[in-house]
Length: 214
Image 1 (cartoon, rainbow, N blue to C red):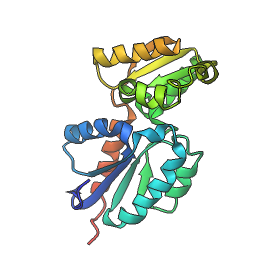
Image 2 (cartoon, one colour):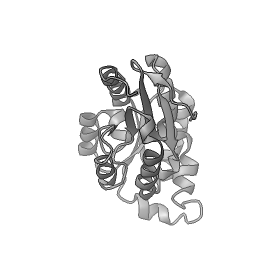
Image 3 (cartoon, rainbow, N blue to C red):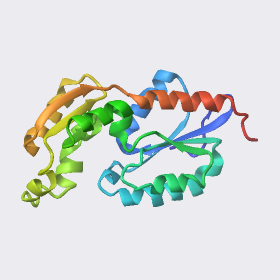
């Protein structure tokens, strides 16, 4: 992220502070919506270590929060056990995306709940997770070194549901290969950007109605 904040929404300074796993989508949406905001991302690897999200988020907000008028947190709860929401209670300029995780805001909250009711043993992939399955999941969970953990970790899973942000045959093939490697059934559901588009647009539009700080 540049050292100088971009100016947008009638002079307001806007920051999107997000998970690295949705950085590509945010950059694409920034172009689609024709808006300006600064983007800073925490490591996507925190998918496996959610205990790092809150302290790192706090450090960034403490260091840079005063530079911005509005801050969108590009996370769901993401395994913080409510810790992220408790942190944001002390930062009134910051608001986070809805839902428990990126699967929910890509799929849509009612749609995600319906999928879980349909099959509780669902393991979800996004474009990013399908592309980086080997690094983030297979190696990140130690399955490359301890293959016996596969049965322990995934004994209760029945299927992999790939929530596709793009219509890309190569990514779909990677998601299918991941399901095969896990020994699970495979489903692909087209979600596009889901609520990420809607909430980013709402964030930008709401900022337009606020006077910029001098």
